[in-house]
Image 1 (cartoon, rainbow, N blue to C red):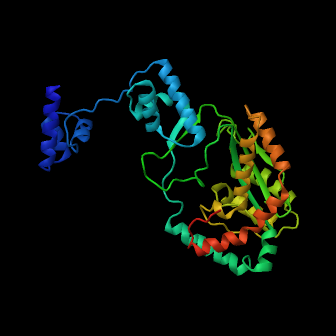
Image 2: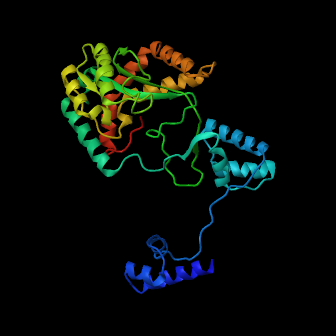
Image 3: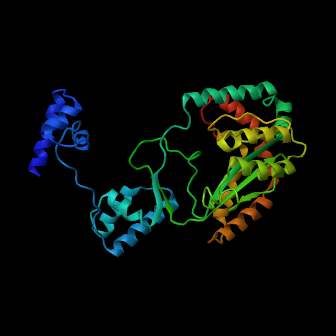
Length: 348
């Protein structure tokens, strides 16, 4: 051990003397990886690998219980769990120990994002796009409402048995250590759907399932690519499009693929350009949120994917059309507010 420390001191001294890498290897009689590792460090001591503190099975169960309550209430953090363990069970552990133990039970534990919704480039593009909608007449009193009623809004949504807030629309405005963590259970089942809405109607709901496009690449994941979107989802939207004049979808990679843009231009008379990172301008985002709220308020909680899918389909089919109409007509107000806020997020 002492010889290793001496060699580390020697390597660092030769590096400070501005000697070449090859000369350091030759003089210190070490290999290249040893020199690369230690020449730029400020210390010669090796850091010991972190080990979690061993706790009893009862304490593990209590940590999982506190974590589940934290996840359900969307408040608290790993530090708050460690504090509860100290107060209630008189066991002093760090939040990293809590994290390491919970990782065995939960799929991931990530901190809620604290960055701003939009950067300057996004805000400028949002204002530019909204001004182009103003020129088309979307913000005029009478004509604006008529145009808004002719927009067919679309989007995709993942519903989970134990859902976490959407990172697009739920972001913290603080960098404090008390920012809550999202705890997602292992093997959590989900339903991935796509749908559209316009004034007076909802489209049929498309449910993404394991299909031939993803058997090899994604190992039967419930996902979407440009081929699936072009072949299955766009024709479904076309069936419900009716007499609408404008088609809207966001600019995700799937939607901006060349085969998709070409097909969309053939199927729909006018495809609206959409600014990046702008879920607040799309009324269907509020529709998804209301459906999720109805699922959460359901007295009989779904316990598997089939039950969750059944509730989603029933809620979508029986959704109040008056609320859909109000959401469609709110599009001009969203445009105006975005311009007034210089591209910053709106209240929607």
